[in-house]
Structure formats: structure tokens, C-alpha cells
Image (cartoon, rainbow over all chains, first blue to last red; front, top):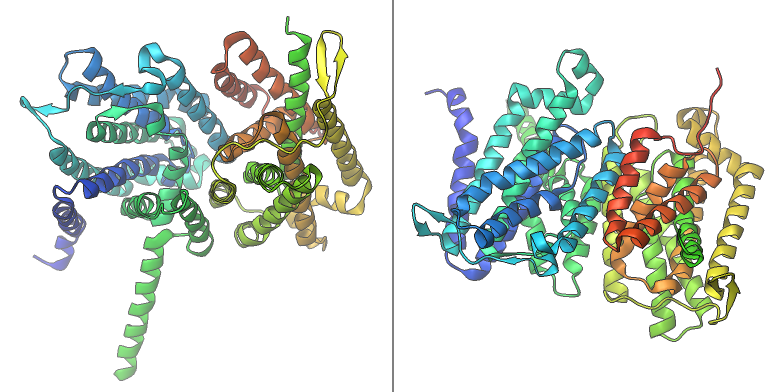
Length: 325
Length: 291
């Protein structure tokens, strides 16, 4: 086979090898599992945002709500019903998608600062509702799960859930990477650049936006499900409004040119907020400062920085080669 | 019917929102974007003044001066470190700027938390516990101070924007930045002046109003959102827009809490935002252009 025919395989193979390395590194170590769960939670939220924000330029950031819906779907079905817990995944996704479509329709004329502000207000209202509606959500105490996810009658332990979560993030990133280059992804990216031209070309912009919002909400709901099934509890505080901020920063930190940048960004966020939190939450401060610095000095994120450096290196090598001839 | 006492508190809260919205307004006039970091300046000023008075034992006035100076320094740093490298007038590329300002807000919130602690602090008490009966309501000296200060600030802002050369330059640049650059207006100097002014207004709001119910670092995002919303409700065509918007927003929030309980604050704010964005996106005071 020629090199060009092998090329499409490079992305899944390389990322798959890294995934296997990550799974073996995590193993059964409780601390590493915590890191992995947090990375996947942040990563999926960031990937959700990728579909409509990075590609479609619509800054709808109510991700704490979508993640909470996914988490509470799991928690409520585990405690209030005898249904198999797997049912909660599609239910959570459907609920999150419905909410995102309603919110998207209510805000369809807004963009930039306005859309960000209204969706943040929605995040806060949803958070207040989670605490307020204690007959539904258990109020500030939240829900403690009495059972875990089970497949074919065997209940999954934390070890298996962590592996499934990592595989899930890999699959979602891979699918988004494909989606980005598909006709739908191209239309979406074009909409982000020039919505009027896309509408004029016959693509309904509102539908495009709503679909991309739904994809994001579905992925966001999965992130809540991962977090809840790994920790076996969900309360309003476990997914605070500030998650909406993190979700926006993650792709910018890692790099916007590819969903893998989101994964890198999620790794960094986990590292900064979990491992470097030595002095009064200064890890979060470091993270916020890092985001500002990356936005100013490396607008394409860390992936862009790496690409820039390799580009220069390759250029230098090529020039060297030409000189020798 | 809403009791008189609630109306007094609406006016106090409205003045606070109005000052924050005015801080956002001056930057918007000079540069054409919303400075989302405003809430960060206010929280930093409030926490700094509270920290130096209640923990370090400085007099209240000194604490407030420190708070306002801190807010001005942060506003100038935002201009130099964030806005200057990222700002491209006349393009539609506003998204990286929005993100950078939101990240700045987040960073300021965290800086305040790391420097002054994450617990709520009581604000500096500039005036005593005196109060006046006004019908069925009690007006505290603190409330009188807040309203007086807001009136003074808006009076001075009005004089600055409509009566000084710098103020006229500010409006001209906000109206059409590329044209202002071509005409040789001092765009950079005016923008620095507007950021300084924003720092003063947000710093005063944060440190003087902190005495009402204390201050905590987590409020930064709420302050920004409420200031933004007040500005959207009021409109940007007049200096009175931010104040009117602040009072209306405070009235909506207080009425919601009064009738439906504390959680209704966020529902009512969201509803107000959606309604205004849908039906009156230019705000109450809008610019009318006759052709």
C-alpha cells in the first residue's frame, strides 16, 4: 500500500496507541483513576463545546447544566426506579439535547458577548434550580447512587468504568475529528466564518446551529454520566458554574485546530487544578493566567505552537539540505 | 404592593449595578467592546478594602482608597497586557477578545481569593449606624452615602463625557474607530483614560457597597453579568442608560425575591435577559438616527 492510502489510518492508530498507554498507566491506582475521571469529564465538556463553538463560532456555554442533566439522570434512575442504569444514558442525552435546542431557539439571534452572557445566566438559573427543587434533585445534598452501571448482569467496578471513560473520550474526539472534515463540518465551519454567505448558499443556518448545539449537549451529558458513575454521587456543587468557564478555556489552551487539542487542554487543566493546588487553590489561578497568556502569545494553542515550531524546524532542515546540493 | 423598605433597597442595589454598568459603558464608548473583567475589579477593590480595614485595622477611608487604587491598577494592566495586543479595530474577530476578557475576569477572581482569602469579609464602614425614618421605611446612613456617591459619580461622568475634549474624543472613537484613527485622534490615550475611569467606578462600587452585606471573591462573575445586563437594559445612547438599567434590573430581581423567594433571583434575571434581548436589544435609551 502506498503512503497516501495509509494516511487516514494514522490518526486512529497513533491516538489509539496513546489511549492504550494511558489505560495501562492508570491501571488500578486510585489516585491515577481520579485524575483520569477528571480529565475525561473536562475533556468531554470541552469536546462538546468544540462542535458549536470552535467550529460554528456560537459561544453557548451552559455546560454545567448539560453535565448535571447527564449525572442526575443516572442518579435519579438508580435511586428512584428499578430500571437498568444504562437507560439513563439515552434519557440524559435526550433531556440535555431538548434543553440545548430550547435555549438555542431562544437565543438564536444572539452571538458573541450577548450569547455568552445569556447562556451564563441560564447556567446560574439551572444551578439555583438544582438546589431549589429538592423534591426532584435532592437539593443541596444531591443524590448518592445505590448501584453502579451494569452490562449483561455484571455490575461494573470503578476500574472498568475508568477504562470505558477513557475509550469514550477517544471515540468522541475521533468522531469529532472526522465530523470536522465532513460536509456537515465544513458547512458548520463556514457558518462560523460567514453565516450570511452560508445561508445564501442554501444551508439553513438556524438548523445547522441547533444540530451543532445538540451534538455538544449530548457529549456534555455523557461527561456528567462519567463523573457520576465513577464517584457514585452527584450534587449541585460537584459541577459548579465555573465548569462553563473551564469548558471555554480548554480548547483555547490545547489548540483549536483539532479536537485532540481539547484532550491536551483537559490534561493540562486536570494537572493544574488537581495536582498544583498547593496554596489556596492557586492552581486555578495559574490556569486562568495560562489561558490569558496562551490567548495573547499563541492564539492557536499549544498544538499550534508545536506545529509552528516543527514547521520552522522542517524549514530549517530543508534549507540546509538545499544548500548542500 | 411592595413595601417602602424594599424600594429603598432596590435603589441601593440599583445604584451599585448602575456604577458597575457605567464602568462597562465608558470602555464600550471608547473601544466598542464590553469589558467583562469589570466584575473582577469590583471584587478585588471590595476584598482589598475589607481586608485592610477588618484584618489589618486600617481606617475605612484608607481601605477604600487602597481598593480603588487597586482596581485602577488592574484596569490599566488589562489595557496594557490584554486589550492592546489583541484589539483589532474594524474587524469582526471579537471572539478571542471575549474569551481573553472572560479569562481575565476568572484570573482576577482567583487572584482576589488567593490574596485576601476565600471567606466572605465585612466591608469597610465609612459612616456610623445612624438612620432616618422615611414614612414606613428606614434609610441608613450607609444607604444615603451610596446614593449620594452614585449621584456624584454620574454627575461627574456626565460633565466629563459631554463637556471635555477627552470625553468628546471618547465618544468619537467609540462611534467609528477607523475614522478616528485616520483623523489622528489620540486613540490609545483615550482608551487608557477610559480604562482608568472604569477602574475608579468599579473600584468605588466594590469597596463602598461592600459594607452592605460583605463581599466574597466568587461574586466577580455575577457583578460582570449584572453590569452587562443593566447596560443592555438601559442602552448605551446616554450616560443615564447604565443607571436606569441598573435600577430596572434591581427592581426586577427584588420583586422576584419578594414574591417568589430567593431562588427566583436567577430565574427572573434570566427571564429579563431573554425578554430584553428579544424585544428591545438596543435598550431603553437608544440612538435614533433620522435619515
